[in-house]
Length: 308
Image 1 (tube, rainbow, N blue to C red):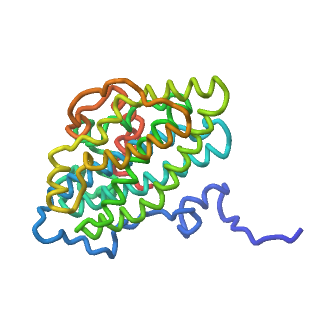
Image 2 (image 1 turned 90 degrees about the horizontal axis):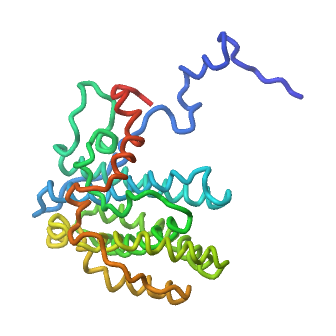
Image 3 (image 1 turned 180 degrees about the horizontal axis):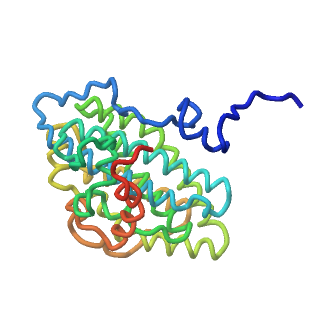
């Protein structure tokens, strides 16, 4: 065996990890602005506060759902699905970072004020230092995972709706949002395909897998309607052509869902929606949200001056 030249100038091999060349880390020791080099000028005729609020909504959807799906890591039914769900969560987390950075660039006043000299970038400040009422995600993405069938049903409905929304957003008058959407379309196409294939597999599998799938669909269906409810900010976004009125996507998304249900031999749930307003967009969340944020934010809040 050939010998290697090792740096043995430390009392412990771990001491060498604390300094020196940062390239030894998989991702370095710092993160650049995700919008570095991008023209973030607000389109003419658009007030910066409106796209900032809109990007917060979409960014919060992605951030909170990413955290939920990441909870399947090491817990999924098999290794392949463990990796698949983790990758979907990473896609969502990457989109959340871009959208939250766009919100901060459009209106810096939305970023929480941190101690002077804090190394926390704007998008991280928005993720880790806002309290629950300041989050604008739909409640649909914050509910606990349930079993695998619940997760597949929730993912299918969310990905189908979000894919239609991102496809529309590629025509946004905001070139930054349009670019984020174009990248997201490719990712969410896979998310929808993954969920659709598993939906069909569970529906046509054993009696138990079908029972769990039907029960899972019944569980997530009441909050599904919130994805299509248009908040005041989303109405402004559609009017000024930088965003989308989600209610205009209903027919398109329903056609996809009905096709999956028909192919799977599963009936559309006959359960009423929960609430009549986009409550999550108004900062009103479920009990599950507080527990989720406590886990998501605990380290950053304990060490607000920390560098990672």
